[in-house]
Image (cartoon, rainbow, N blue to C red; front, side):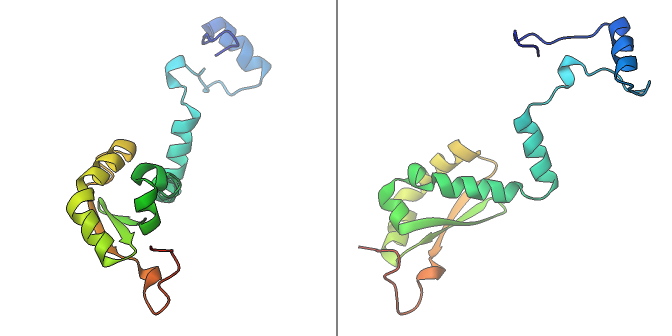
Length: 143
């Protein structure tokens, strides 16, 4: 695109002049307007090829967790791993685990699917937070 928002297409004659000017090989065709890829699509493809797409997704989930679930749940639960569409959510204690399983699971799943896609998260599993096991359970301020 040029500065006026229009895509510039080269005519075959103009392409020949540009090819000679920039010393491009003869088998290098001009880029067509439909072949252009956005930087976001390109970044996603590169991350996927490098095997980093899941890390990027989990980082986005961690950053947006409090906004998605609300401050009360965010203080007592945190996202864990995602395996085969099942997101493990670590909960600070058994009372909150039961509360979320019975009353908050459907709503939480709906919010996560709306944000990250229904194909990525199909189910939520709640589990005790492994970081809070042991004698010192006061790390998270679970009041």
